[in-house]
Length: 411
Image 1 (tube, rainbow, N blue to C red):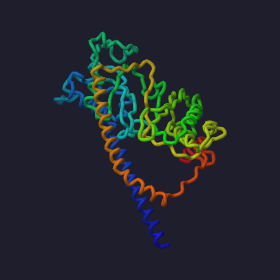
Image 2: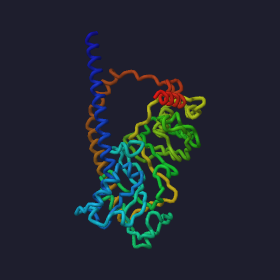
Image 3: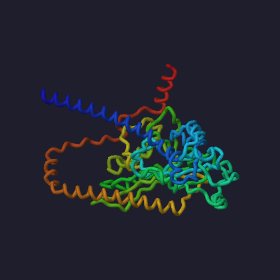
């Protein structure tokens, strides 16, 4: 008995040390992310001249998206006054040069960029930022003359190839894949008409037909407070409109399994909404929940408190596309070819890694029978599934608001 108590104490201490180590690592990642989020702006302001000194960018009038990238406006202005050889300052003061307001479509692999989007993932994700950039256009076609036309630069002798130039200096896991003229009041967040997400998963033993039936219940306008991480301090309206739901095979196999994906499109989404929706769909696909549980969770009068359940993992989640009125993203043929070459090289690299791990899997298979025999004797009994509607619940929105208001009054 004493030995068991000592072992429990050692285990608790070991877990405590691991948790402390994890917290420190999180702080390190947050610090690293702050540096990485500056990297895009740093490349735009400092490195682009190394590729083409004639293509100078004006960052002194950047919008809120550039502020997100933590560019200090006063610092840029101060630098523009100093004549430093080999930099942007070697030219005329930036604010005197022609410029235009454009939107950039950015693809990034989210393993290193936890803070750039609301979700963190390793698959390619699309984002859009808008800012003022140096332009080849004349005074009459500056950014404040945006009209939504797509051929203005063709009549002005050709615009700067923003995609090609920026991709020369950006890290390998950030690619600009298109640009478009944008009105000065454009907001990548609030001007977005719709977003489309994909969530990839291995089929295993999931019942796809039942999952599809359940997923169709999401279509339409509903209160999704039971399918998100609630932020009662800042979000007061949980109504969201889902326009389409699809589930389909990706024609990718591994041994006896097949890769599938859920595609969900809507006007806007709540914090972690997709991951919560997919988590419940997985429970339905496993036969642990009925498709009708979707109806119960969407009925917030009947179910005002969200049952406690674990969200689906963030790694397979991809923000596939964003739709904006009036924006038509373009990319030159040279830039497209460079992007194709880049992604082909990256794909070959990952295929090579997959082949190496597959070889390791085959090598270890010789011990599989022996290990299975051992596991069959030591395997623990799996815990029984607790139905969602029978689980402990989180506080409702009203209860959270009451607590926040009480705290505010106390201050």
